[in-house]
Length: 478
DNA sequence: TTCGGTTTTTT
DNA sequence: AAAAACCGA
View 1 (cartoon, chains in turn cyan, purple, yellow):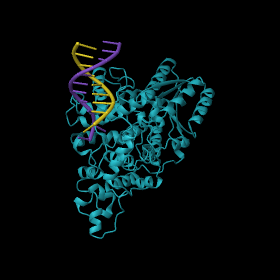
View 2 (cartoon, rainbow, N blue to C red):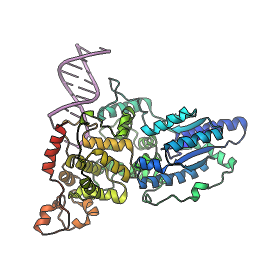
View 3 (tube, rainbow, N blue to C red):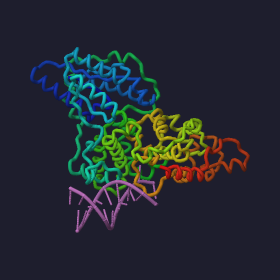
View 4 (cartoon, chains in turn orange, green, brown):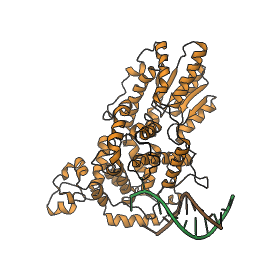
């Protein structure tokens, strides 16, 4: 039996690991012989490149692989880290490996996406039995459907069904202390610290501003739940304030379990599943959004292949203007909130959620550029890039996805800016050249700059009113 | 079980 | 402003 880590870089609430340890424990008790416990992780730069995994996310992954190797060592499991360019080579390697070591079963946690699933099917075709667990969501995918037995296409009914399911069925979760009996393994195995991988330094330092997940569990999560949860519903939309949890990078690489987060939330706030109107519900709502998009991709796998969720928009002919796209990427649109947001992304590898909606709306509705270009740029840049959530968010912004609003949604970047960054605090953090512009002018400073003969900021690349009309016509055509 | 009318919908 | 989901017949 072999344990194969993919997008589940954790020991805490990892059902594949737990099953693997239990099986070996049983064998150990029956035979009294210390089992060899092997685990595997592939470093596949070619595959990461193809899936546009950002350098900062790769760095976070590699740091956690390093950490995981030490943590597994404490449980007597030796993690081998193997460089393999792409999925095909992973399949070949595993085929040879299993034959060589006479392994029939490989234990994994399931991955949602199309290519990943195809790779797993290839392994099965080689005669390798994949024992797969599901731990990327709280409510298993496929369990929540409407009365027509279809996946919900609107968030709120999905959320109601989700809450009902959790209230009725609870949810699986493997507490940390359930692993403690297995720490005996490492003593008996005389596990020696360090292996080949540890001597190779992959770590680029790009993600150093983000602590390892063990510190996140010890410090960041308790602090968030105790100090920020109460004000989350008010502060989470204000980019100048650190009002969000900052946990998405760990969820994206599987270092954090969503089920663990729900446990912690319920410990802190026992009635949260019943309290829709409580301010403390706002954060759970975001966790349920994550579930919504994963369930959606499970039911509609073609989303992973760049398909519009609403096929009636397939006929739209998007702009191919690379120069305009580049200006958006670089944060040179002349709309300060958009430019500051893109600079935050380019500089830190992360962007505040409110800003993601604003810049996505701007690219699709104001510039009429294909949402897939924006989706790709986000994946290439974000530390927390996640196919399901990123695609869901972009298609929502482009109106090709799930959005039940009765009006056609075109964000006004200036009004968004005034509403969520009223004093321009965030704008000035990333556009310090606008420091001298008064608060009420900073959201669209062009008149002010002209009057005062200041040449410190580039012009707006598109007029809002014009762009709004153009977008309405553009979508009307579909 | 299928239908048509009514309520609801990430601002 | 329009589409999803529910609900009662």
